[in-house]
Length: 166
Image (cartoon, rainbow, N blue to C red; front, top):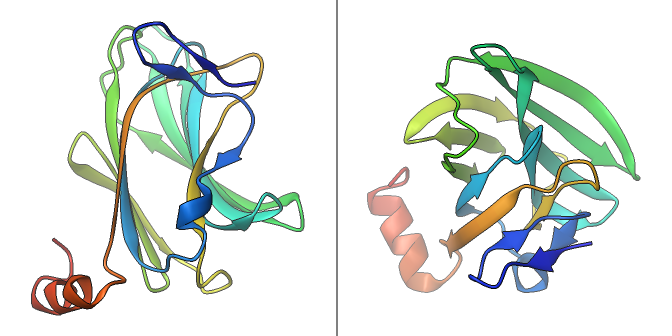
């Protein structure tokens, strides 16, 4: 259900996981994405397609002006549980992509949009797991680029001790 634009951009479809990331513990996921109709979603600490944490940036009310919200939830055994909806004060333009950052450290998760932290929460069910993106047939957002950095190697752990949140 994913497709590639001739210019190199990707249209996100059903949940797809980046397999080399599945054994990671602490990392930072950054990406640039544009909402086409309703939302863009991403998964983290994904053990598999049935168990992961997910967050969506959604158009809560098309406006004018459009109102945005962040919706986060856990997927356990393939079932969405504990959804939390957080209203956001973002100026939204359909033709503008968003820089999104998800920090995963221990049992804490921080979501930032355009460099501003908009959510922090904790949960200790999933201790390891990778990243992915999700959409559906009605709303296939654009994905322009992705950066994944981990502090799991020796030097990464040393750097994390010196500057744990940088």
